[in-house]
Length: 219
Image 1 (cartoon, rainbow, N blue to C red):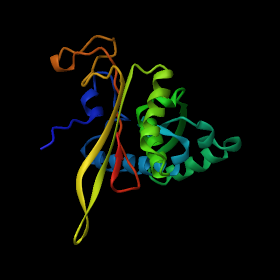
Image 2 (image 1 turned 180 degrees about the vertical axis):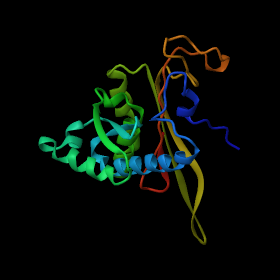
Image 3 (image 1 turned 60 degrees about the vertical axis):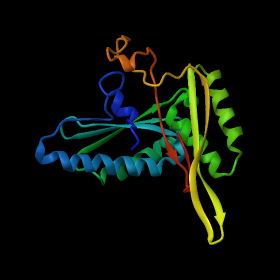
Image 4 (image 1 turned 90 degrees about the horizontal axis):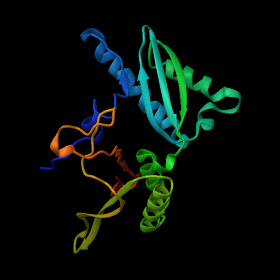
């Protein structure tokens, strides 16, 4: 069996905090969790063109504060703020608390792991050559200050036989540039984690994105 660890869960409490920041008792926890999931699903689908990297949800007393980290905040806000008001009213349908929306601009989307994976996947869906896409993404990220980057494109290779076509084992292509330690974690003060397997003083971000082509994914 594969021994894969979620890159976000691995770093919680070390160099990353939770995307849902609230506390609730047993009575309300399930309801609030379902609200968070529905809000994130709606915003991710609605703001596909806005380059959304993270959606942080905080719940002070009787309020729901949603912070959207976007590469293109103008798409979210709209002309004279018209779109954000409509967005706020739509999000209000998913929760009984008062909704507040905050938009945070991502200054360098080219070195944001989620946005890089999203950009590569969108180009692959348009049938752009995958080696060209990967090389361009690596060069752009390194030029804008990334210490290292690793991109993996994996796809199911189809093979033909006498009875038709069938799915053969997965093939993957990996492109590495710069320094990419396997398990870097450190606390907010910059001290390296005491765990020996995580002794690398480098912050790390990871993302995976499946394309609308069922046999192709990017990480």
